[in-house]
Length: 360
Ligand code: NAD
Ligand code: TYD
Image (cartoon, rainbow, N blue to C red; front, side):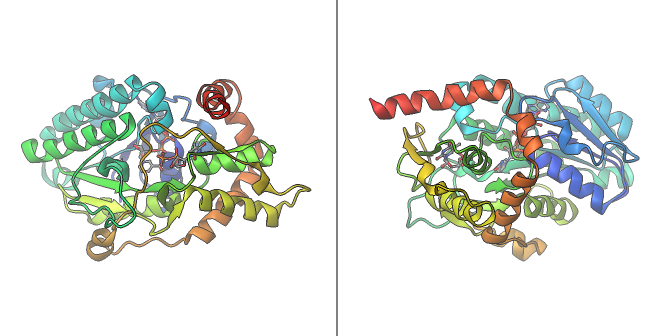
């Protein structure tokens, strides 16, 4: 791709991996718009900071005029939208920011993109795409015998996070249907890999285990998620951008269904092998009070993207998890830098009440 791209949320977990991978594949201009919330971190992007044509813009996707001015100035061929509040537990304790960023923020981007698109002509107009990065959680919860989510599964979001993502997906769909905006939606399963903020299951468990802290498993630990290595997700997004049909949705998954307990035990056994300690990591597993409304199972049917666009994941759960654990071991200074200050307050807010409730 030769024309610039505009990425939102490119300082977060998936967004920064996407920017880093994009910079390896192409030499075009990358504009990265990010508000730098607790989840955004410029350290992730150190290796592209000096790259010709890389621009970081510190700003909010709810600032419609800023977004429009960036579109008009850089004339990107694509807007790839990652920016969001992304953690289910935070959405339970404070849903308002999820409504603001995920719904209103997406609306602001769509409005700016609609205006920009209306001014485009010829090849620039033909090339433009608005790619909205979404989640499998919009489909709700499966029971063990249900078929995995397909693109035609009815939306049934259960948490404030997934409801806000579902609302944003509907807006994106409507902007295609009503205004002809060339949109693409991807609904992906749980990602893991480098630069994931240690509030999410996998980096939290790695980081707690290394500090010999309890590994807090919600409920019975038998909730199931499908796991995809983040670099595979980034490749899928590039493929959808290049070959996806405007107006379509593509489900992206790793075909790696695991219970949370299996995930935590995998981490423990990798650490046992790579960094053995006197006491076993598994002895740190602690069952704590469950998440309210906790979805039991997610599973993704990604046959459409495989068949129509030729994408499939390269990593297995075992190879991806090994890379991830090694990355966290080799990047302890990154973990340290993101777990100071407000992180400690989050851990206290989310976990103290769970332990207290368990003991009661
Ligand atoms: P993240 O929380 O790690 O990063 C979000 C980024 O968005 C941060 O850099 C943050 O500063 C930025 N941001 C937040 N509010 C903003 C605003 N108002 N304006 C500009 N920037 C803002 O999230 P992630 O895990 O990288 O997820 C990225 C996207 O992928 C999200 O839309 C999420 O819903 C989706 N998704 C995530 C997963 C997953 O497992 N993490 C799976 C499927 C889909
Ligand atoms: P998470 O990484 O928050 O992703 P999501 O809720 O979006 O799937 O959680 C993954 C699973 O791990 C989910 O079933 C909740 C569970 N979990 C725990 O058991 N303990 C924890 O401390 C966390 C953060 C999550």
